[in-house]
Image (cartoon, rainbow, N blue to C red; front, side):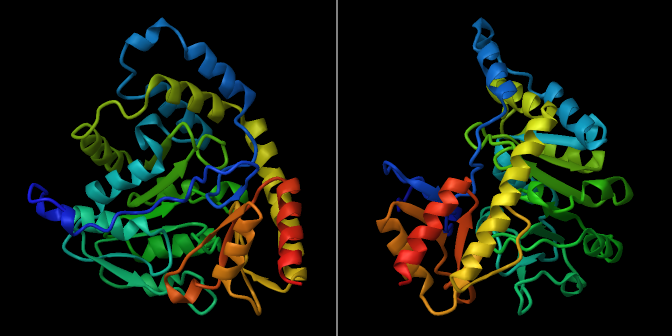
Length: 353
């Protein structure tokens, strides 16, 4: 702390990102990265971009990327906003669209950076409890609000919400913005993007970090009515006119255009997930239904923190959350390759002897 800090700084409780351990021979199943590398077309595009043109600023509007995203989703380019990772996109969403006189609603078990953004931007919020099965109940959001946001599938539970339920929420909540954070949608959950042209208060956010294997490149985007996108652009241009550099735009455009590679790797992750659920269940784990590239599981008799510590001793890292207490016994396990899953199951079998 310093006397030179602005008042808001001392009140912040910053978000702690997933650990990036510097351990050799690590089985890294803690931060939901894709186990498969980017499309070869992405790598070729990045190599081609390494040219003398790097002396020039990138396109501040990222028009090529917006057009590629719009074409993929069947939207117009003016319905697309891009930013430096979905975290930055969401930060702009909070500031541009979710600060109002009534509270912002989001689940009590979800991303820990939602309340961080509320503190940063002085947004009043209200936590809406998940039900006994860790599911989002859309009827619970039928109350006065200044906005609604939740991931689909939710994190860290991985449980998806059916598209019909999201549309039900949109039909009953027409006077504030509804944000569906679809960071993990590419692994078997139906996207709400198809609802955008029917509901002018809907914003859907996506990332390139998961399904398109570009966590290291930092690109995310939001989709919605052009008037909502305009608000995001106004905030972005008041903060940083160049969030997408030349490499990021070239790589992201190539990733959007290589649909076949994206579908192939996503299918591999889904298949590995289903096998992992079966194997964990055989070891007496209770595994929540997942539409993501991770599973959320607890053992019927063993402590979650202890299991995470013992796995780490075997150079296998998974994510454990101490809070809230309802999930303290659960482990969030990223879906890796089949080989990594086998290593995990073998290690757990040995620990549980």
